Length: 164
Length: 75
Image (tube, rainbow over all chains, first blue to last red; front, side, top):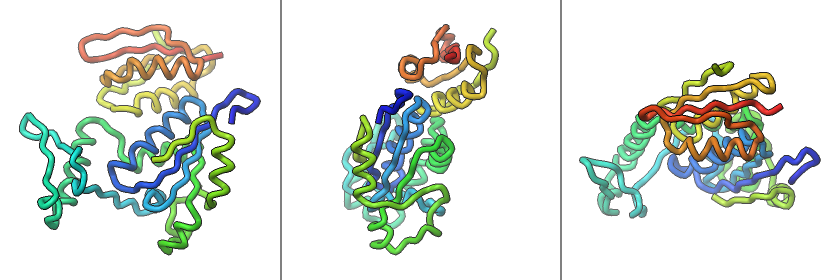
């Protein structure tokens, strides 16, 4: 909502919790906050895992034909049958983490801490917490719990509403 | 000379912007912040950051692969 000081608002519904998909919501929310916007993130379904104290982010090349890693001067994807082999997900995750470190990309724990520091409002979906049997004790401090109506109220007051 | 320098070389999007914002907040209004970055995306991003926030981009140059920006904190 553009309030009396002219501040605009951004809200994002965060539905994915893998290492790669954790980036867009945290990059956009920290940047928007740095640019003076009020920001709200609503974490639902697999996105909820991004609020856990114990972040254990992984990714998989399975079913992702667009995931091509730079390798030997070119780019290589992985066929689905190979992605199913035990250890491939862990290998892809380590590879991505190393690549990110080398290229100066922030880690998700770092971006999440910056988001909290810049007062990004984080709402955990109550229904998802019940469904997957999580309690507030599993989550980082500084977040709140809410439902669909809580999010919709935020959305009606925000200029930008994204679903990731 | 800028009042303060931020070395953001080697950092990728959005870290140069986030660190610049943090440094600007600690400066008094009207003070200047010099930022050194190697992220080519920073050129468009600092321009957009300044247009949106009202901080002023007073200088901009490039030396090899290092981009230099001087931002003046808004009053």
